[in-house]
Image 1: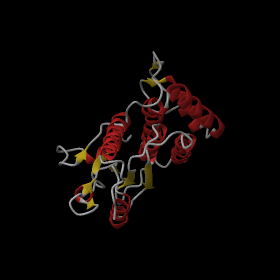
Image 2: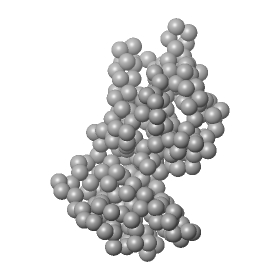
Image 3: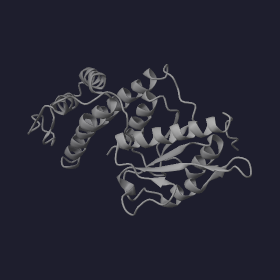
Length: 260
């Protein structure tokens, strides 16, 4: 399942998505975009060149967020469901498709590096301890890169001590914690990160924590935490936090906050 960002995200969605029932390739796709079927067929054939070409073309035509939400995620879910109901079959399909999706997302991030960058403190992206699902955070990292927002991607299963040190060293505007399942959601760690402060005495600062992923479902987040509903919403929230931080820094004479 995807992580949250969202905003002013890249490119607009197509005026009318081509949808029709049935997958035609053995995958339980149901009523989804026609492009999902093409990507699914290429994945089942282990056709790497076609997957690469399709993903690049879709991102170029519809933008990262629409491609992630309407093509990448539904196809990944379909392959996962097929694997769950077919014994050990289709594992190679899921692995190859995931690798190509990750590659396409990384290309977006790299391609955006030459653009203008915001001067706000960075956004930290990390999976909670025990969590290995990184693709949603990779999609978020790519979306942030397109928006010119600084981010640091720490990947899968980040130890609490490592995350604590990263927060104290960078003074981030936000920390995004991904949990795919309730069994990995680490509420104590999220609370610790939200309570962490840095800076000089009398001007201490703290970060906003975004609880991303289905694992955090439940009660309303505590103060200092937000729970975006998807990639598009997460991008919007993070862009707003960065703009607020940049405005605050300008009001303080442009001086960057001291971090320990």
